[in-house]
Image (cartoon, rainbow, N blue to C red; front, side, top):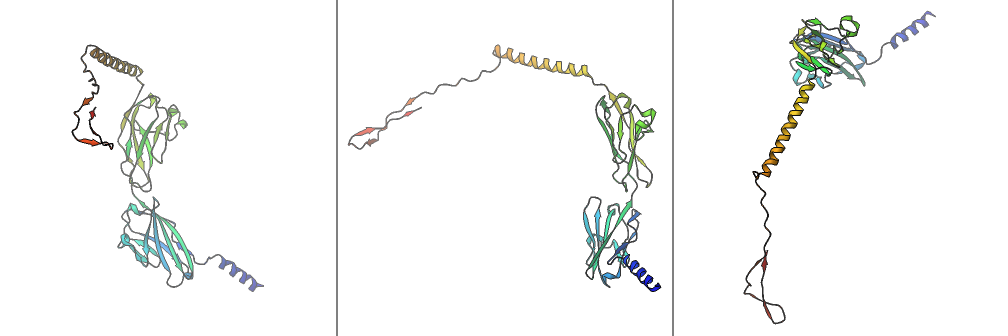
Amino acid sequence: MLTFVFVCLSISVTGLHADFTVSVGSSSVKVKENEGVDLKCSYTADFGATPRVEWKFKDLKGSQTLIYFDNKPTGQYAGRITMYSGGLRFNKVTRADTGDYDCEVSGNGGYGENTIKLTVLVPPSKPVSRIPSSVTTGSNVRLTCFDTDGSPPSTYKWYKENAPLPEDPTKFPSFKNLTYKMNIFNGNLEFVSVSKLDTGSYFCEASNGEGSPQRGDAVRMDVQDLNVGGIVAGVIVALLAVGLLLFGLWYASRKGYLPKKAESKPKQAVYTQPRTDDIDDGDGEFRQKSSFVV
């Protein structure tokens, strides 16, 4: 009875280990820029003594590149990586190395793969922001902020008059009259219908947990009422200018100051002298040719 139980337990444990398995040390690895890193990959003995091992890289834009193929590094990775029985080592990484690394193993009719996500840590740079200096009340206004270097991607905060703006103004009594929408992930600060309460000096801040947060330049945004009187006055001036131009053309034409169009002369018929060469018209008589030129 004890033997039967032992056999069943052995079968159950064996079933927990799938054949042709590829394992990685960690599915997510983080390392600072310009440092070395190991991407560990191991596999079961089912693949045989000399399996085929390949590494592929897919960057954040989805572009895929071979790293290790046919038992050697590909061109751009030669001298940058070292292969060993337990995985792959980068001598020094850059921010462009952030992405997914696939370890693929094949042999003895079997195939297996596993993926490691590598994040190269880079502090944020000074963000580039776009803040209009003057807008009109009631218009839709969007302020933008973007950090080009941070890895992982930065999140963003906005400040008005050096005071941080809450992500959701409706949750704070002192900001409840403001109508902006803030997206901390793409850096946009949008005013659906900007008002004079939104006048002030703004700047954004980028941070990703690496290094110190970086702030953009402060820009004052003035919110002004639409100058209806000025627009009406401009339209009236434009209409008066057009009217004066038309009157001037009419007056000049009436006084004969404008050049008249040249009158076309009627075509005249010109008679030419008969030609001296005689033509036999076939009945034994001759006639002379004459022509008119119009």
